[in-house]
Amino acid sequence: MEKKTPLAVWLVGFVLLSLYVHLLPRLFDAGKIALWLGYWAGFFVLAFLVSRYLLKLQGIASLGLERHRGWLQNLGVGFLIGFSVYALKYWSFYKFGKFEVAGLHDLSFILPMLAQALLAMFFSSILNDITIRGYWFACFKRRQLLTWYVFTATLLYALDDIWNAGFDPSNVVFSALLGASFAYTVLKTGSIWMSLGLHWGGNMMYRVMYGFDGNGVWQLENVQEGPLYEYISLLVTALMLPAVYFALKATHRPRQHVQVEEGRLA
Image 1 (cartoon, rainbow, N blue to C red):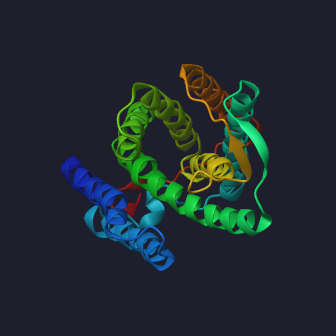
Image 2: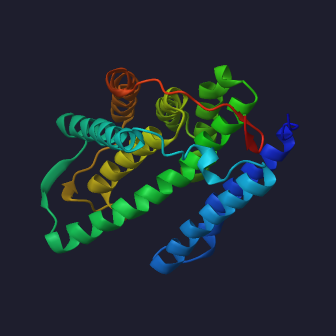
C-alpha cells in the first residue's frame, strides 16, 4: 500500500486552486470574454496538475468529476431544484413587496444575456464545486473521515463566500444552508454533479432576475430592502435540503464504489 499524501500537501493544493479562482479575475477586465475562456481553461489545467502530480491521484476525475451511471441525470435534477428554489424565493419577494415589475426588457437584451449567463454560471459553479466539495471529498474519502465531510465542506463554502460578499451574519447563514445541501448530495452520490446542478441552477435564476448589472429579464422598480426579505431568503433556501433529500431518495440507487488508494486502484 502506498503512503498517504500528507494533509499539508492537500492544504497546499487547496490554497493554489483557491488563489487561482479568487485572485486571477481581479487582474483582467471582466468584459473580456477571451480572458474568461482562458481563465476557465487554465483552472482545469491547474486542477489536473495538482490532482495528478501533487496529490498523486488519477487525474481531475478524482476530484468529484467521475462520470458514473446517472451523472447527467444528477446534473439535470440538481439544476431544476436549484433553479426552482431560487424562483420560489424571488416569487416570495414579489408577493411581499420587495419590488414591482414594470415589464420585460427587449429580447435583443434578454437572449444574449441569458446565453452569457448559462456559460458563465456553469463555469463559476463548477470551479467552486471542484475546489471545495470535490477536492475535500477526495481527501476525506481516502482518510475515511466522511463523517466530517458535510460539516467541513459547509464551513469552507461559507468562509469562501466571504471572498465575494464580505462578512455578514445573514449571508454566512445563507451560504451555510446552500453549502449543506451541496455537500449532502456529494456525500450521497460520490460526485459533484448534483451539487453542480444545484449551484448552476440557482445562479442562473439569479441572473434571470438581476442579470450582470442589475438588469435581468424583468424591469424591476421600487426595490425595497429590509430584514423581512433576509428571513424570507433564509426560509426558502432552507427548503433546498429536504428537496434534494427526497429527490435522491426517488432517483438515486447506491452504486458500488471502487476502493482507491493514493495514486492507484486497489
